[in-house]
Length: 471
Image (cartoon, rainbow, N blue to C red):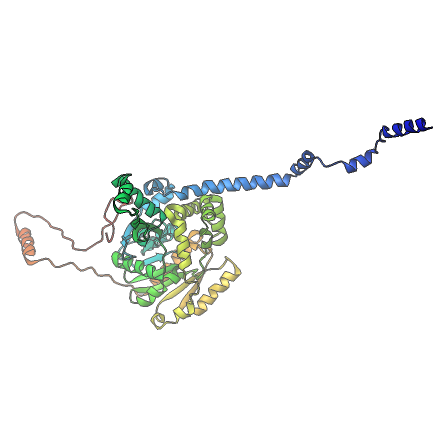
């Protein structure tokens, strides 16, 4: 029996386990990593998400790369579209002194019309330029009005940066460079000789912080004070006084103080869709990558302009605006100007000043941009009861899609005022020169002299090869 028992136990120990059912094995089977990853890859949304993200990053990188290196002004100008180069060829530059410790700033101006007619000076809003008012200028000139449109510094073809000398403490790189320069001048073993002779470590003086002067290029940030200097010098240099001012968008907030202090120079004021909050969303230009993408991609810039400024703008004009805004540091300049705007400007308080009670005014306002914008225009009309209120069919940048309407309204307003007679007096000649002319006229040789002593400012040709106003 014992033997039989041992054989039974041995047979029980070596007995193979029964196979488990197929369903039980499937439940207990560990997941296969390859199968799990394959199932995740089959989701098309994940692929397109990463694909769109990668394309967007590459696009932003290529768009922002050109802004990291300064662009040569000549190459930038030669790469402009034909309409922009043609506009530049019609204009001139004026030098104005904005900052006392820096070089003069060049302001671009374009004009049309007889020089003896009424002078109308157009000041654009934030992000716009004289190019956007080119059709208004041409139309006013055909109506026997001398129209002048300028590019405020930081916009259009005017200077957008300024070189400023700054004093600051020398940093780590400057001190390292001083040590390197001293080693290069005195030799590598100069330090060991100093230690042996004096027992002191050399180059200790280079560790001391000191003030150093550096020339840095900064974006032109215009405020009310800087715009006042620009207006005063432009009007004086071009001999425009008395002048009819046309202020668009944010131009009123920037020039309101100058008008109050120079009411004798201003004959009338025309406001075109003016607001303390400009139409252009300048805050989007503060972010370098975002701003470069908006200005560098024509489709994005056209959508921005049509959404916030004017709906009926052509693709070529929208592209031209993008080039002017981005070129030569324009993005940073627009952002700086936007931050300095007086967003709490009160039109009613400004218009109720005693100096402006007798000032002829008119307000040109969009009737179809939006219901809220039209109501804001009526609020402006109530704040300026002495102003004539006229609606137009354009957008917040009506110079683009309602240029003829603007020119017609401006012309009627200017023509309704008493005409100013400009007298140009000849400078008297010295007696000895006058005597020579009299003798020449009475002699046998009939030599006709024509001497014009009218003092006219020189001008710069389109490529900067002449003499600029105020140069």
